[in-house]
Image (cartoon, rainbow, N blue to C red; front, side, top):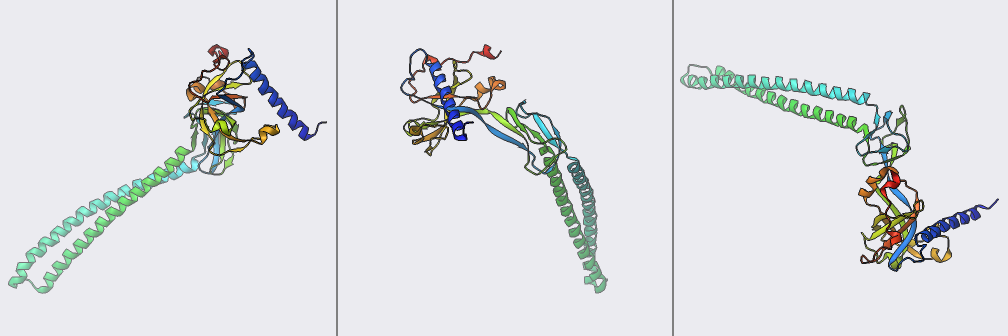
Length: 332
């Protein structure tokens, strides 16, 4: 039985053979890769997106399975909201009660305003009577006290109006907060993609932030390759590129450079030759246009290996071997 290190070497050599055979297929007419076009090997990748519950709770339904294609906005899962619904109904009831209290307080303000006007009129009538000696000082003071009490009760009534108004705002805000939690309990797809993992089942209790599904976002499909510093340093974002998959070596997929790492690193371990491993390289991301991905989104498979070719100069023409588009009828 071969040792583990021998198995790794054999695997690396196998990958190298695939790359060489793919390149040989593309340029079987004797042409070589034109000067000014650089290339590297990689595999198709896509960003992973977790579909997670915002709050802890019990999973009510999961509507997608591993491998399913889903569209942006599609409902994928839902949490149990029985307790939240009860809290929402209570907040609505408290809002309604506060609105009734506000109506009572406003009616009381009207009553207290009337009482204050009456007390002020009686005090106004008492002043000349007191001056002419037709009213005792004690009676006048009683009228004055009645006016002051009426003014104080009016201020209290207005304070009750303000309190009821704030209570309505507080209870309504609580109702909106709970409604937001109920809305958040319905989990939808944020992007077009494919379900990679189904991590929870109906009836399970998960913590807040716990993932229920993991999607592969097919809006950002790319291949990462590693290019020598002398090439990566001259590479422009948006540079024209082509991706050739091992499973379809006779065709190429249009792409463009969307990212060049600002930091160099050692050549990744999958490159097994000592000469290559001693070099510093830059990670380069070659992205397939989203419109092209959407046209064949049901056929996109991440993990498929291949080669990415990048033009260093825009004026270069692609050789015919790297400009053969995948015919639409191939997937019909």
